Image (cartoon, rainbow, N blue to C red; front, side, top):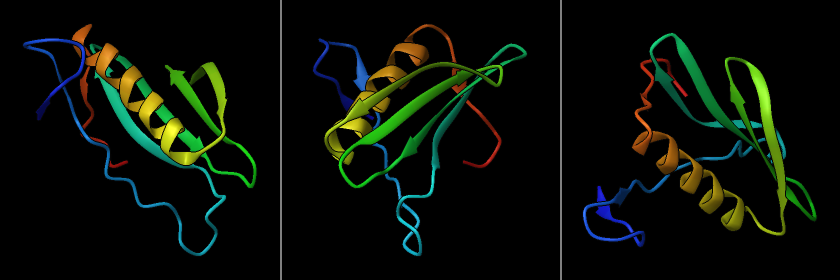
Length: 96
């Protein structure tokens, strides 16, 4: 874990994501978290002109956002993951 830009004592985790090399526009789950019996995950949908990130909580889409680059989309996904972890969510045992 590295110190985060949010301030002392807060950290972020770099996402090391490998997008599908065969079909780079296929959706990819970035991370999964749990809190009690609840689950959350983020999915990236790379595209030609925009990249979409979606967040699901208990298998219901919470929100979707479009970005001009994969890098911006990944940064936003990492930001949301950090918010959830600070709120008590933990990484899931399920493979990503």
